[in-house]
Image 1 (cartoon, rainbow, N blue to C red):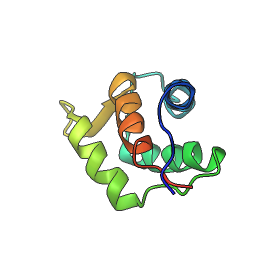
Image 2 (image 1 turned 135 degrees about the vertical axis):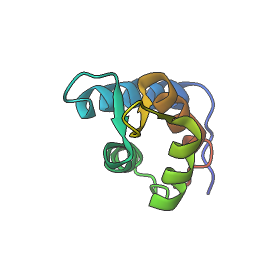
Image 3 (image 1 turned 90 degrees about the vertical axis):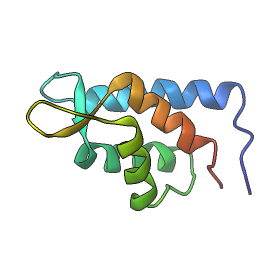
Image 4 (image 1 turned 180 degrees about the vertical axis):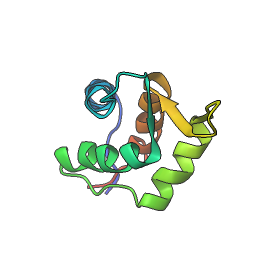
Length: 94
């Protein structure tokens, strides 16, 4: 059953995405990798009692929002991660 994703729910998603990003950004570089994104994104969804998106879905969205670093690592910054979570939350189901 699709969720009503308006209002407080999206604000909560944004807040939790920012918090989880800061936890995952251990080195405080301002960027995290797909290996960090997968578990924290699943945890955000689980904390709401929702089914988490499949890893393949998260990875596709990650690649759309991420950027290539000078060292050829594909990383995502906090703002883009929050946007990724918002997009995924729009398709969340109970």
